[in-house]
Length: 437
Image 1 (cartoon, rainbow, N blue to C red):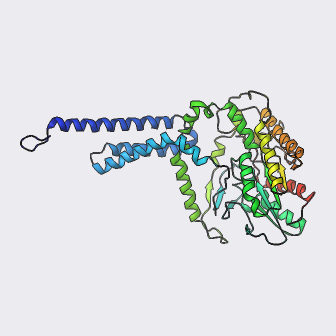
Image 2 (image 1 turned 30 degrees about the vertical axis):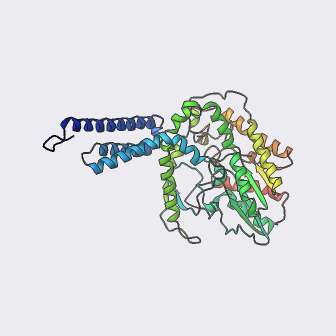
Image 3 (image 1 turned 120 degrees about the vertical axis):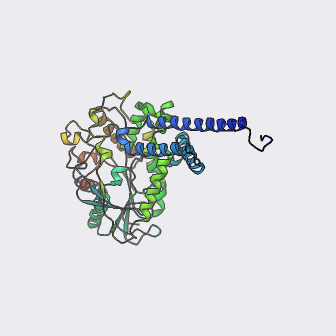
């Protein structure tokens, strides 16, 4: 309201200033509260880079929101509101962003990775890692629409022990198998690697259904490790249930903004990749393996016993049955492979110190014997289920001694381990080869 001289009433101005101050204070208080909620569940020693980014991001927004310049205040409030939305909505958004069963690596990846240090014994030199337009690792051009006459086409389905993301394209067990089979069968062989880290049996079924139209002569399915870790964590990790689930979902590295930023960075890398058929000329990325080395020696964590009988849950047997049935329905020859691991009382001490999946991502551990029991139980369940349904199963696990000759951690193969895996799988296939379609 203006007085007789056209001046704004001081009481009204003070009231508006007070309202703005209260609104700004509440906004900042909410941002600070959510910042603390995001910091609390974050493993600082593992995720310090993301903690630092969010601290800088939040501090900048708060500082700008209190600026005397309107444009800066507007930008600051926008940052603060984005910050609040990220923390508050991530538990809902991430469930939708990550809840899909058919998963591949990014299309047209072209990376050169140089391992630094001794984090992965048995892997040497620069590793050239690529994918094709469908997100599969291949070393021969594959015409997915029309398979050339006389070609024997193999698809490998699995998780990280199939993916082998730190091994050069031509050092993976799938590529080595391709060469071995071509020599043994005297025909062109294409082995297409569809593996992606973290996948479990439901994902494998989705992948099988997806690749069926690409005319495979054989499908190899390597499964188990992520399924047994999922069972362990569901039973023992309190953060997966009730309020703990929401608390953990607000961990900064697990929020929607981080997920989207990683997707954008991956897209930029793909856009920057060398054209198909041309070698990548970029300098190799250095990789120190800190994600793994920070978690090594997991058996030294506080030990807990699994609360119940160590055996696969009914959902794992059901998943294996569904996979066998799908192979029959799709008229595909499928061979199911057991998962080799280093979980054995005779484990080499140097390898024992490199274990980190006992289970991964938590502050406790099962004993080495209990992890060995899980591996044996899941491998046995796979063999029994597949064979009882009339399917083919290959027990490759016994071919691997628990040493750094084959593994660089709990279950991932180094270069020599990949060669051993290729030989073991080849023996299963050549025992009763099927003619190319």
